[in-house]
Amino acid sequence: MMGRLDMTPQTGDMIEDMSAAANKRVADIVASFRQIFIPYPRHIEFHSRCDYLVQLGQATKGAPQKGMRVLAPSGSGKTTAARAFAELIERRSPPTGEFKPVLMVSLDRATTVKKLFGSILAEFGDGFSDRGTEQTLRKRVLSCFGHYGTQLLIIDEVQHLNFRSTATNDVTDSLKSLLDTGVIPIVFIGTEDAEGMFKRNLQLNGRLLPPCDFLPLRATVAEDAALFTSYWRRLDQEMVQRGLILRPSGLEDVEFLGALHKVSAGVIGRVSRLTEAALEIACRRSADRIELYDFMLATERWALAQNFVESNPFRSMLK
View 1 (cartoon, rainbow, N blue to C red):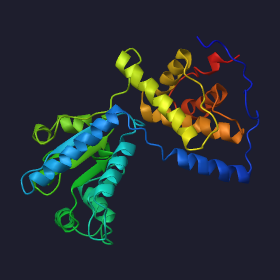
View 2: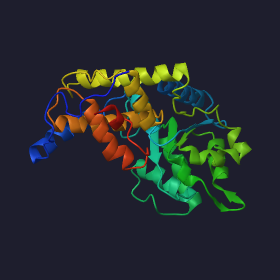
View 3: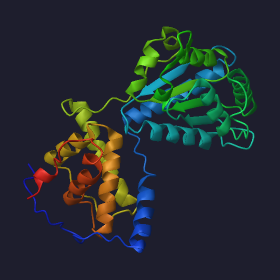
């Protein structure tokens, strides 16, 4: 057990520098932090399945295409992983004005199929993406996929499509129809709220690969606990390697990891978001490393304030 520690930080100041100069310095550090991508096993598996979907799509061009669902709690890192995959494909096949290998769209609330098609056209740079009927927009979308040689469509926040327009016009039928055109495979990314949308249409499900959902890491399962610990250690090391902070936190005690798991609920993206908040505090204090004190304050300001937890487990570790 780590035992109770003094509330006073061991490096840096107690008072955070909130000056304009500090704002600029800390903003640059946090911006660099957000570029960190730790490809832990579930992200690697996701990238492999996306790559397979692309390869399968190219091998079966013209025949009905496959899709894949990726559901996970908010903050699981699914969007970050999807963007990292898109960047991987773009490094392999650089996009040009006439070539867009991967198209990723993020949906707003209560998005209709027509709005989905409009969002896709907007990503292609169509200045009239909101003009026309649903069928007209659909034809233009399919034309753009062909014109730009797009190999994969990623639809993010797909739970915002989770409703029926009428009893006979289900959004899932439109998604199934899009796959049936034989033009492009689709990755559907969303929260658990989208699960019902997929469950209610077995015909759509029949066109999907096995789900690649990101489940929270469980503290009571040895493999999950090891993944969680490994992720935190690599994140801690990466911050030092990028020069965002001078030294590793040194926080690897079982009690600390238990508190980190409690606040994040085993959701990897929340570990990153909490760490980002703690890093900001440490940098404003001119600390050499992120300390338990910084995680305690980050939990107060971010996790508690946004109802991710009901109590602060880091506070009980401090005197």
